[in-house]
Image 1: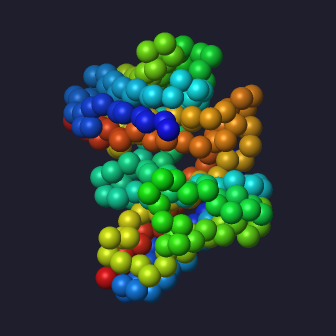
Image 2 (image 1 turned 120 degrees about the vertical axis):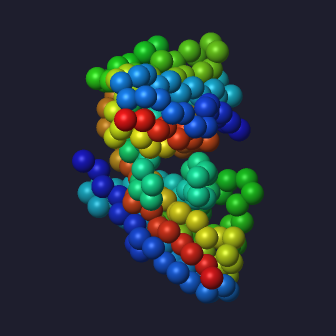
Length: 113
Length: 119
């Protein structure tokens, strides 16, 4: 089945710097890759997503890139702010149309003021 | 937008008892719902796929007799943790896809989670 690896597990950046989180997946049939932000004790919140027919997507300070050949995708956050501090999860949807997600292991991002 | 609720938000129970957690889609119908378990500082692990009108599909390693899932209607799925033990203490989150919200995008909407503590 699908396996999603995520790095790094923790990341500290200075406010205003950029943060990059990387994920790799194993199932070449996966075609949808969402990124979630989760604050302690709360539900995951979708922050950006990308489909397999797109290489890059941007939404203000957040961007996601996808390399289907290498089976990896990355989250880029620019001009980080303290409120960006949270745990970020990538996910892959391994089978078209089933909505099933396999999550990465998570990255704890800390933005230092 | 699509809203998913869970009840209760937290529960404490004694070892050996059973606990039922409800997941409801409030403004859309969901033929499929997913149940995840999240231990502290860990990722969301998919436990099972709940299917309205048929049996749930469990992920490898998840005991179907211990985690009973019933998808009673198009807006309600329940997870019952039977004979709970302290190692079952976790954050349980459900999610539901409201269908294709955008062309070819299979979004899911997550419930707020239920924190289960077994003493």
